[in-house]
Image (tube, rainbow, N blue to C red; front, side, top):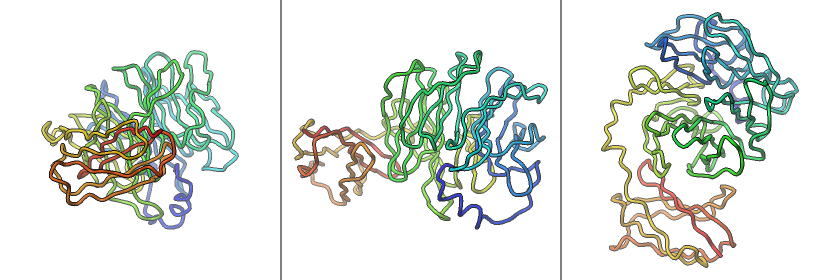
Length: 375
């Protein structure tokens, strides 16, 4: 899908099973139409059928093939009675264009068909700011496009970012949230719908795929952890609105990708690798489980490199401490098994060059982070 080397493996080694156009096949994204209590799911093509959009009822059962004849559809987004669909004609490195389609949800007729770009792009996910604009990630061309629905025009919104994939609108703070994904460390960034500079707010070890926000402002994040054919047991997290902590909700996913909040407080997750939608009952997670531990402190900060880390807020005895540079490269790691009585660790980091670094502490399934300035 987005990580091209995996696609070769998919083509050669994914088990063959019977698929019809009324069956989930490589689901990539999902939305929930709350007014009609229905889901819409985009599905990749396979060797026998083109890609298509399926409609599911509130129980997650397929009711109809809503829109056939697609190729490699990615993100979908509802604006009023229009379902916007990203449709890629081919994979990474191809020379076919990608398109933005608009489908009338009442009639099933295509009412928008605009070319996003020629070969050398792969569009992944899409969101709307509810002000007449769509935002589209392009993980191959390393861009985010802004599309004005009324004028049907595109502009480069963010450029030169590493594999932007997931994207959602934060209506509370009026920000576009998007992922910057790498295999070793990924980020969640925020930018104003008006453009300008973006701010990285969250750091995660491994790929980040999808991001959605609930009405309370909390986020849900899907992640790919394996490589090659090492799929399965992959996580979906809940993160606070401030993005200062995350909590593992479920790790029984297989290539989790697009998500949505659906019926009866369930999180619907597209499992691209296993051809299913995983419905996670969010009512099973009590609020006490989602309370973060105290954050850690670094001092002095800024520093010449010799710092002390205060880990007294963590109860677990086994912690994993890492330092990353701004490119996402891990430059230091320390497994902390037996901490000092006062919970403080001295680190000699004077080998670091001048710049900004991210210090992360992994505690159970939660990653905490702080910025470190070295001068």
